[in-house]
Length: 157
Image (cartoon, rainbow, N blue to C red; front, side):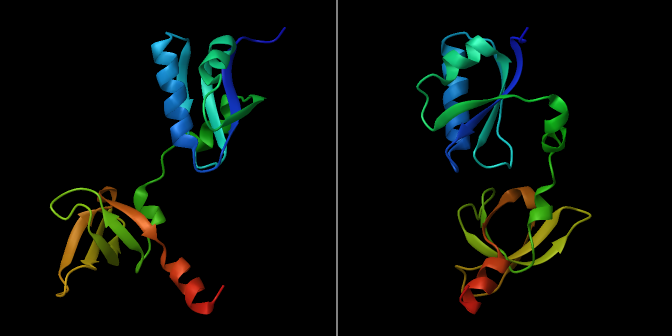
């Protein structure tokens, strides 16, 4: 007999995982459906939903960006995706970032140094005519362009 409660995987249009998750969560809340968790991981194109299979089916029904149900997923397969990785691990010197908190919110900057132990970075504002180093927590920035991407562009790749 097929179990009715579990974690189910759905195919989603790449880049629209968060929009699809929000649509499912909203629909489940409005209709009072038994949807416990909607999980977006770094695996692009997939959405994981925990709850009663019939309620999940109602929640994803006619939701934008969601394709077919791919089946049930054991928790053991998702454990590696449930442990958050520190933001600082994805940042490198010379990356271009956008500041998302504080008085410089919305400004773009280039990373000049990284302090892994404190999860802090030093950035130089790109919009400023004078180079002013600013020390920020790694959570205060969003990566816009990796320094590796710039290297590839310069090489014409």
